[in-house]
Length: 66
Length: 138
Image 1 (cartoon, chains in turn orange, red):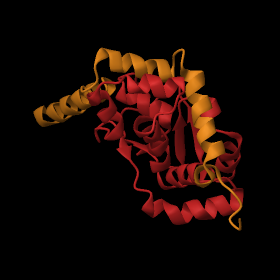
Image 2 (cartoon, chains in turn purple, blue):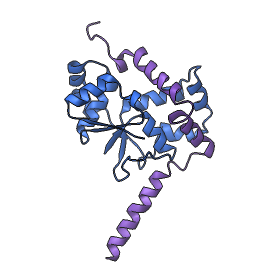
Image 3 (tube, chains in turn blue, purple):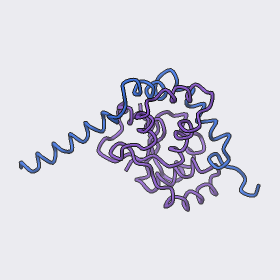
Image 4 (cartoon, helix red, strand yellow):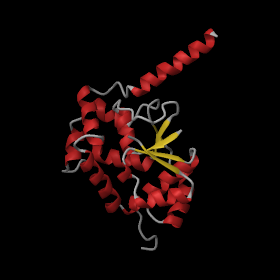
């Protein structure tokens, strides 16, 4: 029973660690990533990603015979 | 292992775990999607995203260049390439869509995206045909 509890504790600690993100990031870093993914820059980020597909024939696809 | 897109990768690294995204399995980003993030870090353009990413600390950039494997793994593209080429031949599109679908096929027929627009019509249609379920996180 105790072994089970220890295993569950370890799994829960791992979950908490993962949900907290990368500890190397500063608060300012986290804010930058938040703005890009869910904040005021999300639309610009998507436009940039769309441009990658449009501009890069390997990523976006092209006629293999050309 | 759950295959995710660029948005979810950056949210998870930043500690903004999306509601609904399971936290009991490893997360993985296809190499071509990691490439799109890396391009902006190593060859920033004049756009606002590049400028903002340039403001990351060196440690912050490193967290995207070399994500901690406990948080995010980058999928080796080599085992996926043959399936990806077959998918591209069948449905059209390029490496990005084909590799993502091949990764989904190899990992539980499941894909998670951060926003609906990043799924794209081609991937959505092909995923339906291939019985790959596409989730969009909230």
